[in-house]
Amino acid sequence: MANKPTQPTGAAAALAPQRQKTLGRLGMITKGTVLSWLLLAACSGERTTPAPVLTPRAHGQALAGLVMPDTWGLAKSDGGGPSELVRYREKMGAVIGSGLLPRRLVATWDALASSVGARDTAEDQLTMLLEGGTHTVLCLVRTGVTVRHWVFYCADSDEASRRVDLVRDRAESLGLAIVIEQDPTWSMYREFTPK
Image 1: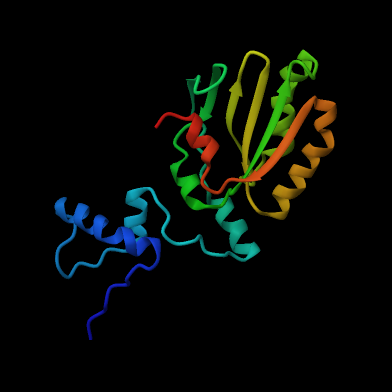
Image 2: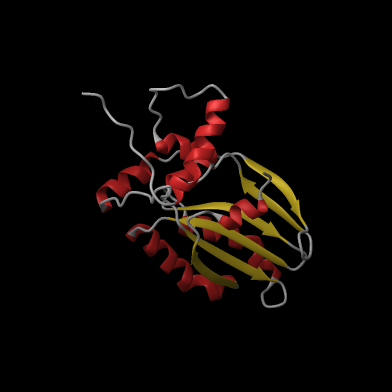
């Protein structure tokens, strides 16, 4: 009995003929070859199925297995506002694709509302409180003339929540404003890093 290939549904079904056509032109698909739709999604840079729901233990194991690149790049951003120097963690494709860090925490220091000394120690304080393991990871630092933003991506885990609460408790003494939002596609990271 021959195995039938799994057919995509929803948005994936709408995109499947184009992917099949494109990959077929590249000679990657021949009749009778079954290529995982997950692989097709990875090749296109799109997620066609929701990330699997993991138990807390499996989630923790997956987080522990993430390899966090430790190389940084620099870029200049001037899209639609004042220029910023952007320092970003490079080669984050596998981390983004894992879906394990869906929340974004932005800590903002504003020269008009804080002391200059706070800016100089804030990054050390933030990384000390938030990082350690892979529950929260500093990925971007955006520096403007009077404002600096530290952008962390966080897991939906008790440990990440505990660390975020520590930062919220210390935000005022550090001269920081804290904003946390869902960002499973890492839209801010993608906006400020080279394509």
